Length: 98
Image (cartoon, rainbow, N blue to C red; front, side):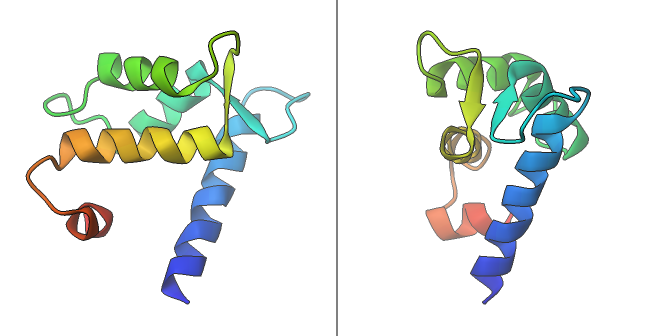
């Protein structure tokens, strides 16, 4: 049950940031600018283990080559990449808790 509510909250966060500042956005894809904003606003970027450059690199890595946006599935992959970097000394379960 907790897993489901976390997933729902994650989907909602994705949708809200995906449409931020764009009245024509559908909420199904997120621009790099909004990805960076999400990472800043949610405290992912700490300036030490995760920087704005890291966030930009991960965005470029997970999106399709010709795309300018990421999907929700790519978003989850990007978060997992950043979690591995930020919590490299932790197990997968410990990364999720932090």
